[in-house]
Length: 57
Image (cartoon, rainbow, N blue to C red; front, side, top):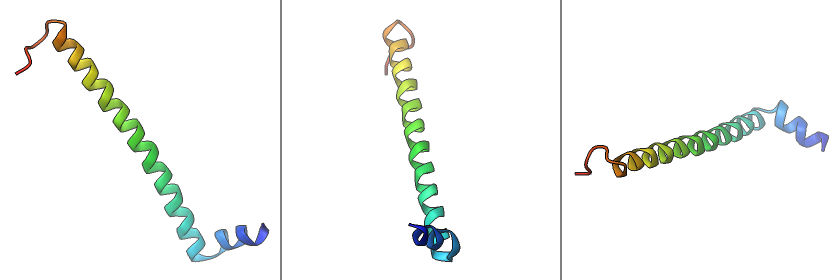
């Protein structure tokens, strides 16, 4: 197990792999939050239209 950690932390390819992995996790979190916000905003706009707000063109 120590050898894998040494390869990950001590070599250029290991550090690049770690950076890409962290970037991809961050991107996944960003997209989940982004889509949830968009869905909630669209639901709120639809409820406002149904409650007598602006007519739907």
